[in-house]
Image 1 (spheres, rainbow, N blue to C red):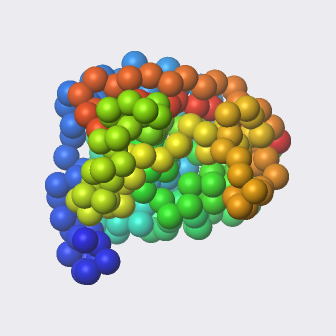
Image 2 (image 1 turned 45 degrees about the vertical axis):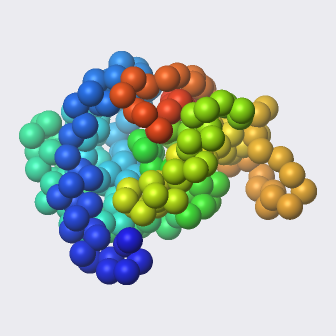
Length: 231
């Protein structure tokens, strides 16, 4: 739908898709809070696909946060959420996950929550996060991914993926997001295949990795929470 009239779709997304999903947010709250605790005392944070900044209450105290989103209509909502959460240093910039408007090796942490499902190239987006991180910096990600092969949910994800992409900004519920994250650190479980473009691992290690079911997520389950550390 966005391709037909991007400004109209972006306005719709800002008004409708950014609305809080109470039951869903409650179901992932413990995992998200634990994940954000791993940001520690990060001073410079980039929130990729920031949307209306639902993560703002979890930003590290005193951090300077840059919210990046391809939808400019999200700017006012993101700034309002950051201000309400007490984030005094918040800036919004238009940009994409595959091409962040951020200098090389300039930030302590990159956050991605429900982003990799809709980018054009998940591996490129993860590599871009590595580019802007300083050595030792962390990528923290909370994403949904494909259900185990052979399950009824996996079949439903494949069947309904085109409709989901139309109404939710390109979201693909059948992506192997966890595998893409593991591949970025050269970890086991990454996708293989001779036809797949090979990339050298962008991250030194996986500090945390957990797959879990999110209640109320429907088609968008299971989830993965991961922390990757840049080499």
